[in-house]
Image (cartoon, rainbow, N blue to C red; front, side):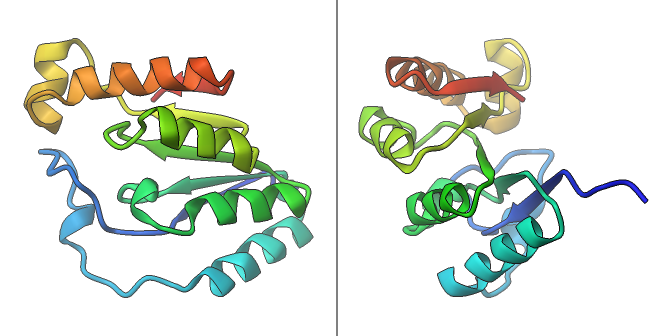
Length: 144
């Protein structure tokens, strides 16, 4: 049996965007509290996972995202987050750096016209700004 290497957890269905290809925000469900996610992270590490990816919806809508990233790091795991970049201003980039995040994946669907068509007007520029803010804090980023 292969070893578990990575877990992807959808920590919220909430999202600020109404992307044409995504039904997640329409799925109404109660969010787990911080302590439950800490148990999931701890158990995942116990099963051999080396990386946790925080996904959603938009993970930056959770007030505890920085604490959860820090918890994963303290547990010995790499921590990544996937975001649409909308809320990723310089202050948030600083908090992500302080939390110890390893990688931030910013969703970009293609050129500006396609991306904005799929994710909403102005979202392409917000995603680019997010990438610039991550670079200021030397946070590894990818385009997903």
